[in-house]
Structures are given as structure tokens and as C-alpha cells.
Length: 467
Image (tube, rainbow, N blue to C red; front, side):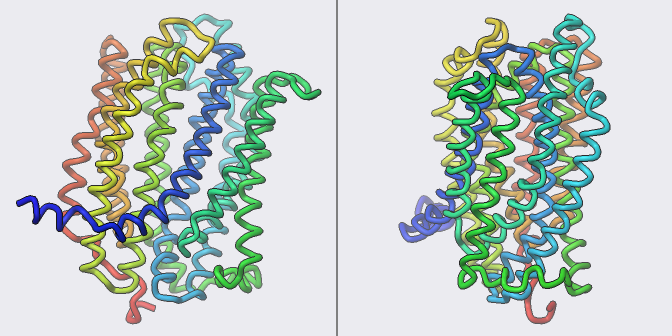
């Protein structure tokens, strides 16, 4: 019995060595990025609750933008990974062009929306039950932060288009190096500009935004410069900007696969923001507590999120090489590895639940609620790890319509209605409300299990008959 289980779900040393070689730099890159966000958060947390709330609310919208960009590069990324597995560098070049165009469109739309509707967007998270002065201060700091953060949308978009292509070629260290360098600059500028150190002006919230924007430019520059100076390993960049022609047939195919992913990521992220808005009905103390808990849990969630991305790359390249049976076997082992790793990470998170909130300069009741939220989110991590792995498995085979239903359908069909009803139609305590909505992820686990087990995702998108 155990021998059969081991053969199906546990790989050999070479298997894990290859997986870790790819995923560790990806994890470190995003760990570093989230660590910067945490440092940002802690530093701003020293200046006051209203400042922290203002940034927290804006980051909900930046999160929607970031995830939408991720969705935009993901659709073409499926083709890029399979083109790379096939050795078709011209096809990979077309996929990169497609990503760049899509990212530019998203940056333009997001910049317009955030600029025009900043007051309305921030006000969605402000409860009428809070003190007027707290509401006014939160709105002020939020708008101040948003104005500067708009500048960072462009380098993030272009940087993601390049980073996704670089990773497809198996190079995960360079994006990591870019992130590490960006982190060093961000932390230094955060300290200098928020508190007025090293002869710099004391700028508070604006200082935090400037530091973040500068780091985005640095992170993107490292990946872009490396890609264009190592054409032997990134052959798709040769002639990349000699026109932006993409074969019409391939464009249509990438749109068919990519649009569902784009909308899925957008609506999923928007759904998470909508759920956060439901929580905010209980007051700005809840916004502050979620900000604190989200800071630490996002840091630890990096492991399973990047293991999912690794599944998309490894399984996608095997599908592109028409090794369908091997793709199925590898996926089983990676899925099991992701969940097992996340259980360990969740266990490491629990002891920090009562320690981490103490760092913040805020009220005792906010710290207590943040501790509770960290515990609930840690319990839910293995569930999220499994559904994340299922998502990338389905996506690797181009089943973007199914992934759209999997993510969007669950978020808008179950989680948001549940959060809305409990928040607006009951007086349920925020502790119970938060736990019920967060742990509803278990239902998604069941759906994901049967979708992956069906093998409907075992598809080669770039076989000779389709090119």
C-alpha cells in the first residue's frame, strides 16, 4: 500500500533536486518582495493606525492590478513554456510581444481608473460607524500614497512580461537577484524617507510610496538588461522590437486561452478585495487587523504560491514535448510536495500569531484580532496550497475556461455571497465571520480534486498539427 503511494506521490532525489533548483530562486524572489512589503508595513505601522489603514486600502487595489498583470502574462505564458519545451524560439518571441502589449493596455486602464476614482475607491472601505476624524485621515493618507504608486505600475507591468519569459527558459535566479537588489534599496529608502534619516526629508506615507516605486524600476531593469545581454540563453529577444507583428492565428489562440485567465485573475483579485470590503463593514479596526495578519501570512504563503507556478512551468514543458504520461506523474508528485511543504510552513506560522502584532504601534484590540486572523489563515494554508496547485495544473494544459470557472465561479458563487450575507445581513462577530469565509476554501479543495483527477488538462497546445 505504502509502496504504491510512494511511487505515485513521492519522487527520487534527482526529482526534488531539479524542482528545488527551479523553485527556490522563485520562492526567494517573492519572499524578498513580500519581506519588503512587511518592512514597509511595519515602518508605516510605527507612524500611526490611520497611515497604516490608508496604505492598506490602496494596496487592495494595487493587488488587483498586480494579479491582473499576472493573468495577462499567464495566458501567453502557457504557450511560451510549451514553445520553449519544443525549442521554438520564434514562437516564444511572439508570446513575449503579446505579453508586453497586454501589460501596456492594463497599465493605461489602471492608471486612469485609480486617478479618476481614487476617492470613491477608498471610501468603499470606510465605515460610517468610525469617528469622522479617523475617516478623514485614512482618506487623506490613502490618496497621498496612491498618487505616487501610480508611477510604479509601468515598470511592474513590463518587468512581469520579461520575468515570465526568463523563467520559461529555466532561469529563475536573475529575477531573484533583481528582487534582492530592489529590496535593499527599498528598505534603505523606506527608513530614510519615512523617518527623515541620512539627511533625507521626513515624508511618512509619501516616503514609503517613493521607496516602493524606485524599487520597482530597479527590479524590472535587472531582468530586462540581463535578457538583452544574454541572447544565447534568451533567443526570443533577438528582433523582439523589430515591429510588433504576431501571426493572426497565434494571436487568436493566445486570446482564446489568455482572456479567460486575464478575467479570472482580475475577478479573483477583485473578489478578494470585495471580501475585504465586507469585513471592513465591522470598522477600521478590522482593516488594520487584516493588514497586520495579511503581512505575515502573505510572507509564508509565498512557498505554496511559487510551487504552484513551478507546476505550471514543469508540467507545461512536458506537455509541450508531448510527454503526457510523464506530465501526469510529475504533477502528482509536485502537488503532494506543495501541500506537505505548506503544512510545515503553516506550523511555523502559528507561534508568530501572538508575537508579530506586538511590533505595531496600534491599539491592543487590533493586535488581538490580528493574532486570531493569523491563526485562521495558517490553518487554511494547506487548503489554499492544494487549490493553487490544482489551478496551475489545469492551466498548464490550456484549460483556461475551466480555470476561470474554478477560481471565478467559486469566488463569486460562494465566497462573496457568503461574506456579504454574513457581514450585511447578520450581526455576527468578526471572529466567526472571518473563520467561516476563510475556511470555505475546503469546498474548493473538493472541486479541484475531481477536476485534476479527470485528466482533462492533459493537452499539447503546440504540437505540429496545431502550429
